[in-house]
Length: 180
Image (cartoon, rainbow, N blue to C red; front, side):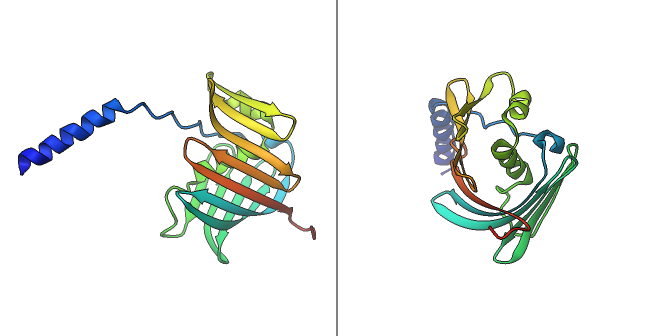
């Protein structure tokens, strides 16, 4: 029995060596709030598609030249809070909130979608590029490989696809304080 277990582990290790390497994940953006160049106060409805499932989350976003604040709400309950001042990312979340939904990734996705392209380009490692297409699409690449795309099909809509992590987020935004 021990021999079978040992042989299984060896075969699994060899199989892992035979598979092509997984592309490295995209760099996590840590842009200062001031790099946004404007203030935002948005209520967003996110439809997240991952692992064959979809989940709707409400996000309240405030950003100015000093802070980015985010509150994630699910079924009327605050699930997570995020506060970024350009130096320290503070996040709190309720017990049971998925670890995969980390403040680091939420902030990075937010910045990839909303921050100016030049600020993003300045923060990317040397082998990464951000391409803009007609003001309606951003393409993040490492070399020739596409890591993520951000599309803007309507003024209040953003679609972000992370090809490496295998998820898609549809974002509908409404400015807080207006009746849009």
